[in-house]
Length: 341
Image (cartoon, helix red, strand yellow):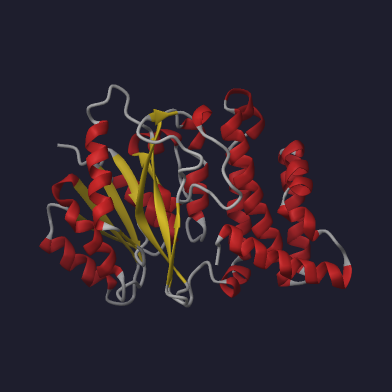
């Protein structure tokens, strides 16, 4: 019998915390499938994955591969997934057990529906290790509850609200039909993973439970500011792939509310990329910033105009000393709004 959902856990040198992640999913029992993708780890991660697979062979499968990055590991997980729905759980994160049971109960209810939702949305919680605080991100103000709905039924997202990898469970076949293939050896692919399939989604269900626990504040994490500046090339790469993956003008004709949301998402990505490049300084960073905006303008002039002059980024075009000071202020404001580090 087909599993309700496949949880894919990309693993790279995560021996310190992967056990907590796996243990949080095990209460799902035989209703779930867990795929551990060991992405060329050099610590004890591989052996830990193998031990779990041996102890829970009916639930867990381990795949070892040469290092190909987060995107490559997700691609592998999708290739082997057998569950009706598909969710990524990063190895340093975990899920809430009570919420997991509610999610599985809802997925069972989907099997009895004439039309199964393409996308299940749940809440996630920022678990800040540095400050020992929790901040839930919910969608009760914008999404209908207790029924299947379409993009036309949703309200307007706040500037701090986005559908991140942590909040989405896509129908597995929809992802395959979209032909999604994430770039290898690239960080921040989760943004492309969420963004690209959205126009293919016709039926949605929002379950108001705090399901995913997203750890932030860990040293060396890919959303750390210094790390993000150092890896800004990869942030730019993902932003460009998002720009070219969908024509927002075409989407607007049939799904205007979705197009508005996707424009906001793309604006967030352009803002973060630009701020990181400004913080990086002159030289190549300044050149990369010009090239990024030129790329957007060439691909979609109207989208470029709306983002450049009607978004948070518009406040960063002041030249000189005061402009630089303003950029740093805007960066800290953006960080609080978008929660990217």
